[in-house]
Length: 456
Image (cartoon, rainbow, N blue to C red; front, side, top):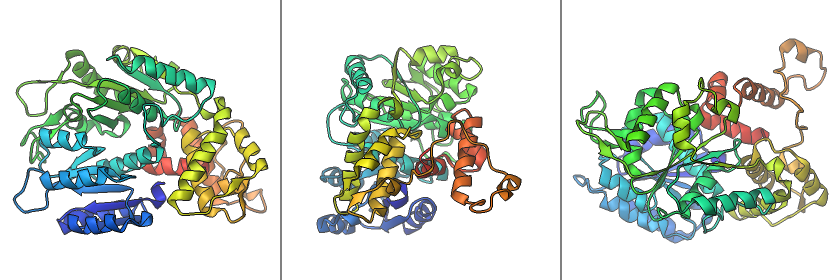
């Protein structure tokens, strides 16, 4: 979805809006700007699905001198009232704790302070797009599609642990639906009416780790122009989802452990700690053997996080769910792109059910999007899904120029070489997305898009 997504930036400061637009255009095809909420109202009243945004970056103050955020919160309420609301990321230069918490309570998925960090803004948009694409209907486990025995076990576990306050660790491969499990736990808990806040721990630089999680006070360091709420404060009363927890450096793990043990955090520049009131749900794609390796992850932190462990099965272990998932996502994208409804050819369904789906549900979703966009016949063929290359029995070697020279035709097929290079990097990084992205010279978001593109 990221390549065809519509990102709308609503900010009265033209320079700020243009800066965000230039940054996001490198990653997403359609990025538009508006400087007045009234123009957004006209867009919403037109009601044309193709013109409605997938993600809105919403400034909270439009009138000079206003800092209470009331104008932006009114727009947020209007957006959340739509039948198919966009994901909203609140933006403000005045990130006081009450305003940030109020925006999140009213349905914003995240908030960004101005001036922003480019990597942080890009990651927030990518995360919002991923959450919106994965969301489906209401109910605590509605986003967890599938009625296989493995998925029934997962849903039963969620029903058992959600009403408690126990910390939960969700284990599973990339694209298997770990965040959906975390959201289902929150939705079925006593904290369901409060904030669910997701943080990609693997994307947090060590240098800003404490500021992002614990917050800071104005003047605490050179760029601290105002007080800023950390994620622990912003999620107060709700659930804090620590994604990619296995990619945290050991030094950052020690800081997180201290906060969890003491149930308090001290913002940078503050002279006293603040009590925290959050439920922790964490997730990682690390192999459990590595997770229990003290050289990779602190045992004392692990024991704080894994009171309850939920293992999300990969799609290849629940192939009976594939037909339902295909039907759901093909229908979703037919409606989104206003494409004709097509049946899935029986031979295509058989082959898709046999495919081992190394990218799990995320890869299946991207494959369905491609099929809806590219299909030209009366029914969907296997070739429309872009999975023609057979799945390798083991991670392929990166092709060298010399080896390629031995092949007469198609020796330098860039798509195949790119797929092999990515697969080899993931193998060398032992599945660590952040490390593989650094090895390839890509951002995590770019690597995720390429994983979807190649069905990895």
